[in-house]
Amino acid sequence: MAEQTIISISREFGSGGHEIAKKIAKDLDLKFYDRKMLDEIADSLDVKVELLEKYDEKPRNFFMTRRIGKHTNSMEEILAELQFDYIQEKAASGESFVIVGRCAETVLKDFDGLISIFISGERQFKIQRVMDQFQLNESDAVIKMARHDRKRKQYHNRHSEHKWGDSRFYDVCMNSAYLDVAGTADILEQYIKERLKKQA
Image (cartoon, rainbow, N blue to C red):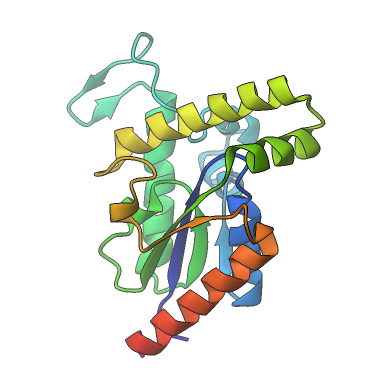
């Protein structure tokens, strides 16, 4: 494997992007970072992780918060910056890993080993997955899916240089509906391995 490999995976809610990322990390023997990084951040701040979780990957509330220069009282933006610093430190250390969300394709854009991926999915495929995972009826699954994607889009567009899901700014965009989670992960692993051969 190359000297450093960083796989950033952004995803639509219900597409299986998190599971795909986890499988890639396991199969390629890479460290895996997702919202559990909040545990380490909470420990470093000596606060309960539950306090941070409610602000994770959420857009700033413009009516309740203010920003003056680099200073803000928005917990959403403070937590975002803490997570950006966290993954930048991991990358700067030379560590190879898979990271889910956190605008990593922008935050880590200067690292040569970065491969950025966006996972989408057919609407009915995603709805069924959300229904199965959360034991919801179809209408509730649609509402949950729309709410999560709206927040992710707002969060991403606030902190990134490009629009969420814009294929021009990712190395690979893939629809997981046709090969499901395992098949999509396998194809992406082949792509990653071929990229690494070119970089070697």
